[in-house]
Length: 219
Image (cartoon, rainbow, N blue to C red; front, side, top):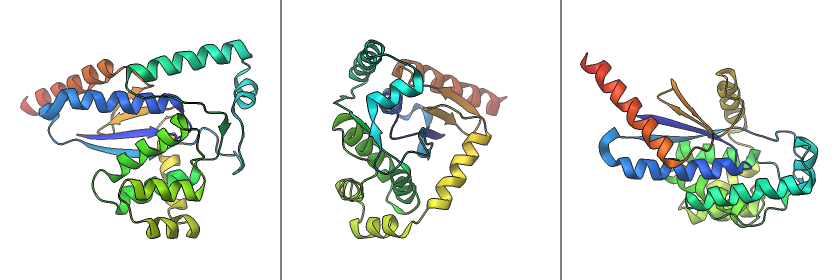
């Protein structure tokens, strides 16, 4: 089974959704056979500058929310994160995430098995848990080294602009398939599970997909 996790590092619901998906896969165990999880790029703020902007001001402007509504949304996100094992910290700034996507693409193309998933988790934790800039080269290189990727190669990728075209192409591919919100979990390129669903929902959906595939193969 192939699972494409389409998401953005800047998306808090993507942090919740990835943890929930991982928990579902842990509970299912080997029932699905071999499962490949691929991190796919999506930018919520593709025109965001490298310097970024104040998070509260940006959210208020983009969604028309007042301070009380923002606080309520924040509390809901923190609560859902805790349910799925993700600890949200203070995120006061929003940055451009394109370089993070380039590094993730590189990890998927050249890194050892599991390194792309590990880097994605590290990026989400750094941004949503620690309020760090996922577009800063020093942060990206630190996280690459943290998950066992070669730091000098990471530097080459970041400084040379590698995988930019590949990320743009991948973003267009998913958008043309109708993905306009994240997280989006696409199973075997034909089944879509949208949003940061609870782990129980992911588990039920994946088991059902596997059962349907088994019935089709047997019939």
